[in-house]
Image 1 (cartoon, rainbow, N blue to C red):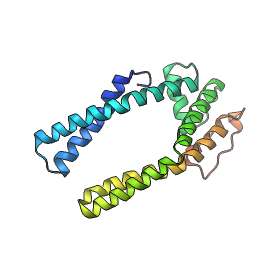
Image 2 (image 1 turned 30 degrees about the horizontal axis):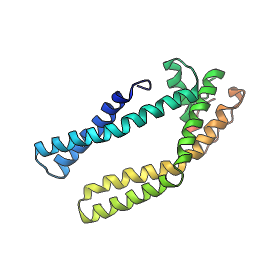
Image 3 (image 1 turned 135 degrees about the vertical axis):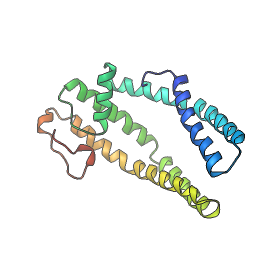
Image 4 (image 1 turned 90 degrees about the horizontal axis):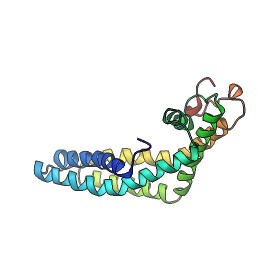
Length: 185
């Protein structure tokens, strides 16, 4: 999927959002089946047209940051950028460090507006939970998780980059407080 064109990403991202929107409209809002389907379809089109090109562009930029790798090695490098043992192959380590650096740059770009957005969405979710429906509590939990990830991820990525950039992964020191680096390296 990492090499997929924008329209495939649009179908995928839009389809997921459309299914969610349909289910919410039908099950939570109690709309008729026809209105829920219409809501899901229009939501899918709108969401897909925005997120498809953005996701495809980010996937291309991440592949460029990792360097030329076969697809199976690229997925190993992407996984190693986030968790698990440090790959013994220097090319995979370098690609994983490149993927982690790319992700860190993305988080760094969002350092001010990202947490503010998630706090605002949590507050909106709390207000809707109290004023409209307890189902909005799901959004409070989801947005709170995104807020925690926004605050935790840069530190985690810096640690992973430090591990990946060491010359000899056999002597890697594992930090007990970092769940992304547990295991034998």
